[in-house]
Image 1 (cartoon, rainbow, N blue to C red):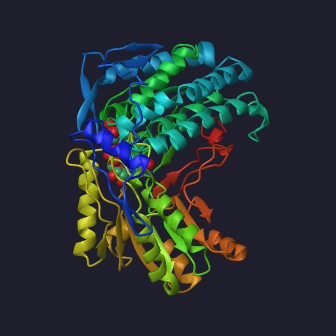
Image 2: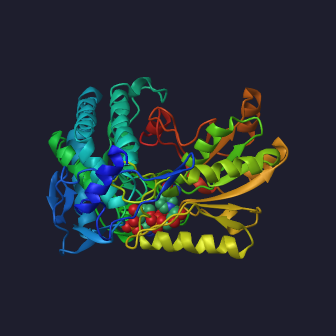
Image 3: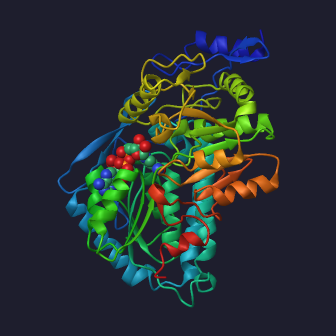
Length: 509
Ligand code: NDP
């Protein structure tokens, strides 16, 4: 028995393992050996979690007017984590008034170089408190600590650093001399990257001189509220950032408020369309970052092992709760069997279970409704005749879980090839020629992202010019950088976040 195995056995005997009701582990099969990783739990006491959280308005935490609250739960265990204030119309009024006051008297007139100092401070505190954020995000969202620690939190800090650098250089950003801020930004974000989406929204808005009213998703409010504490710690003037927790109607009230000058939304296409309708004719500036059904295209000359890693990262990262997920795999017919075979072998090494275990690859589905949606669409795939496969995978008894799933024999008309599943479900289609790959890749109402795997640079350029997607990755997938603009067109929305382009959304240009 190895030292690791002995430790695992000792821990299990002492009752220190994942514990009753905690997610089970999956055996991994490597070189024919059947072996288990020892538990590697991340300590959760690094982040104190309060029993109740208020709204963050004018620099203070306050209860909702009328005192309404809702519970946020841990999707890996279904246990309640905390009660959170539910903002109503009066709270939206208060928050918008605080943001307006801060915009007119403090943040708007402040020189960009001074604003930058606050953003740098927030970025540094995010780095200093990164483990707290990573743990809290995993608990509230269900995503693995490996991802929150290595992706969500560092990228969130990077966004604040990046936009801090722009705050005093707006005159040279290519938007003409002295571009003006818009005023109060109303920002509504989803649950799949709660902290990162908050950073994507707040950092450019603040750098450009706007003040913000941000509404996190109902199922993942906690890291936005921890970020509010960071704003306090950084000495950010009251009212510059306001955070209103609540459900869809809170978001609708923020968006519709007459005191809001700019609306930024990330979420479903359906709600994006409703928001577009709601604010039509008001003069509010709008950016929408909506759904996707990206094609990840693998040619027969691609480095197959790397492509398989890219496929896995493309669709199983963050349980597939990713708007730009590579949910449609298009493989050249001559290598399709080989690629699918390699992919299945790779999927057998993925570990599904406790999000706070540092070895976990696949965490919990964020909510019961999302699990139901994934289950429904996967069932539709089977009913329509596609072949369903998952690696052997014992799902935990409690919480929301879905095994990584691959559908082969998918045709373009299948619902699993057309609709955004937003879960760990991959649909595999084949093609023979580059033109067929382009035609199939573009056979979607969305246009957010795409991937190309080939050793030929000329083919990458040829494909990238023809794929109707806002972001095209070549020989990689799901790679993000604050300096690089991100966004879609068609039913994936409009406007760009990140880079210099991300500033335009928050300036009167
Ligand atoms: P939504 O689009 O409903 O939620 C996104 C955000 O908008 C949340 O903060 C939500 O609040 C808020 N919201 C809901 N209704 C309104 C409204 N009328 N006006 C203003 N804000 C509103 O996504 P869901 O969470 O319901 O997920 C449904 C599906 O959407 C998923 O299955 C997935 O396919 C897709 N989706 C896509 C995302 C992407 O990045 N492309 C992100 C999230 C979801 P609350 O959470 O409290 O309801």
